Amino acid sequence: MLMKINDIRISALGGTICSIWASISLGDLLQTVLTAALGTLVSFLTSRMIGRWNNRGRK
Image 1: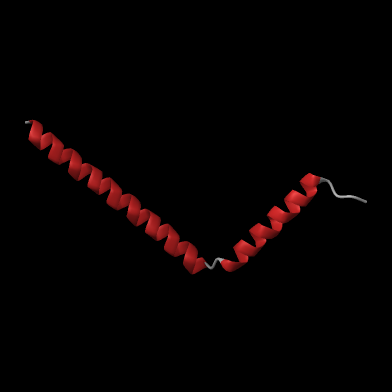
Image 2: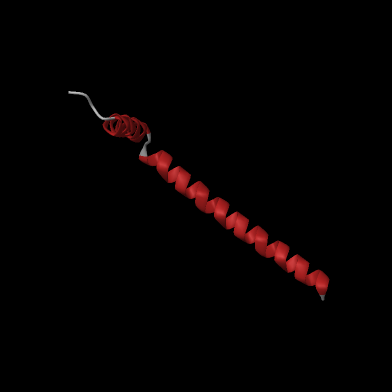
């Protein structure tokens, strides 16, 4: 019996996801989340400071 192309793609995708999932530890995931949160905070604060400096120059 021949497998359909979609079945082969799904099998390959499932195997890839399982191998990636096995190589990611909880510590790596936590570090990624914390780094993303810190980057978001720094970006937000930088935007606010630049906005205030621009408003100060207009007055």
